[in-house]
Image (tube, helix red, strand yellow):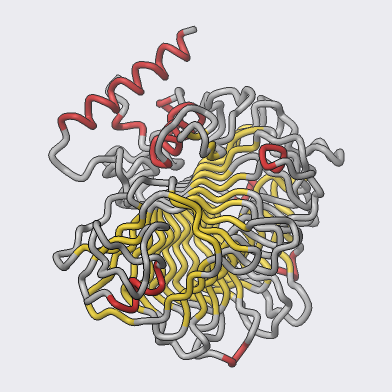
Length: 497
C-alpha cells in the first residue's frame, strides 16, 4: 500500500509542477508545435480542390492539393473524417508548412498501399495529429514513407503527435535513401507487418526519435500473433553508395517507451545494423532516457542488438521486467560481410528483473546478461550500471566478452521498480475518442507508463557519486537533470519526497 501511495504522491507533485512551472512543461515534452505566422487554409471531405479557395467556408478536398497551393509559413487544417488514397508531398518550403488535424486523431489517412509519401525535395514540413493505417490485409507495402531519392535534398520533416498502426505489409514508417534532419516526436506505433519494423531508419543522417510509445497488440486489431514481426526500430544502411551516406549516422533514440513484445524470437526492441554489408551500417547512435518494459511472455533475442555497428552509446535507460530473451541486455554479432562491431558504451543504465530469471537458461527465460562473442566486438566500456536479478547471482560466461563483472562501478541492489501487473496497451479507440487505458492524448498515455512503471523507489542506490560524460540534459519526463545525478531514465531528484 505504501508503494502505491508513493506513486500517487508522485503523480500529484507532477501535476503541481505542471500548473506552476513557467518553463516548457514536462507535460508537453517535444509535443508542442511552434505556430506559423502565415495564412491558414482548410481541407475537408466536403470540399473541392478546384472550386474551393481553401477557406473554412470553401475548403479544398485533398491535402496534396492544399500543399501545392499554400504559401510558405502557412498552416493547413484538416477536418475530421476518413481520407482514402495516397497523400504525396514533394514540395520544399523555405520557412515551413504545418499540416494539422483539426481534432487530434480524428482524421484518418488510410490506403490499401502507401498512405503518406514524403519524397524528392520536400523540406520544412510538419505533420501533426493524424491517424495513419492500412485499409485491409491485402495492402501493398508501407504505411508512411520518407524517401530522399538518394539525393540528400529531402530535409527537416517532423511527424508529431500521430498514431501509426496496423501495417499489413512492411513497415509502419520507413525513412531512407539520403533523407536527413527528420524528427519523429510524440507518436504511438503499434502492429507492423511480418518481418518488418515500426520504424526502418535506413541510410540517413540526423534522425531524432523522441517521446514516442512503441508496442504491439495484434489481438486489439483482430490479428493473430504470428511471431514473425521484427524489431520496433532498426537503424542500418541497405544500399551502400547509392546515396550520399555510407552508413546511417547521428541517430538519437531517446525518451521513448517500449513494451509488450509480440515479435520474432530473433529480434528485439532496437536493432542497429541488419543486412550484413561490408561496412558499418550505423555509427554515432545514441540511445538514452528510454524505458524498456518486459511485460510479455513472448521471447525475444535481446532488447538491444548490434550487427556491424560503430560508436553506439546506450546510457541512462531503464529496463524492467522478466523480459524472456536469449540475452537480457544485448546481443552483438557480425552478420554476413560486416566489419567487427566497435566502440560500444553502456553507462548508468538500470536493468531490473525481480523474477531473478537472468541466467536461468530456458527458452522462456533469459540465458545470458549479454550474448557477445570475443571476435564480434572490438572496444567497449561498461560504467556505473545497476543490475538486479531478484536477489540471485548475476550470470557470467567465459564465452561472452561483455559481462556484469566488467563494470568496476557496478551497483547492486533492488531499485524497487513497480511490479508489472497486466498492462493495458494504449490502443487508439476511435469510437470512444480515447486510448484503451483511459488517456485522451498520446502525451498523457506516455506519462502514465513512465509514472506507473518507470520510477524506482530505492532512491539511495539510484544516486551516483560518479560524474561522467554522456549525462543527458533532461530525463525521460523532459525535466532538467539536477545534481546529485541519478542513473536510469527517470531523475528522482524531482519527486518532492
